[in-house]
Image (cartoon, rainbow, N blue to C red; front, side, top):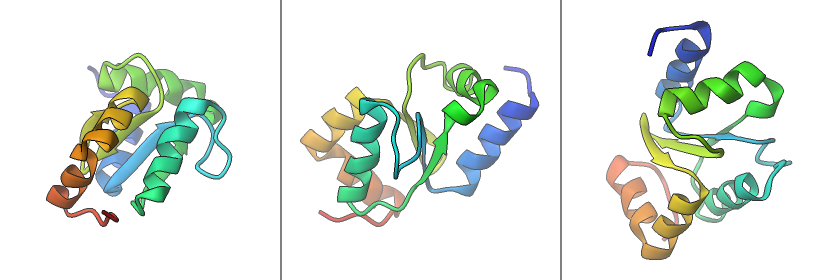
Length: 111
């Protein structure tokens, strides 16, 4: 992937924040059920995270999909690593794998 202003911005955001969720809407006002599920799940687990509203920037919305090579939103990154979208998040919460991952990466979490 070639470096463009949007890929540079994505890299910077992922590097600057331990947990970041590229989502439709904001954590306080999600604009789709999948984004709401992941944002609320992170909040319930007490995970500090930054939400990035891709609806506010169409270039970012398409850029994050190309960056991760993942076609859907939301997209969760932890300590620079792509975790996945809503379905993967849900599976990881149910199995306990998400809490384990957060603890392993040194991210504060309840549970």
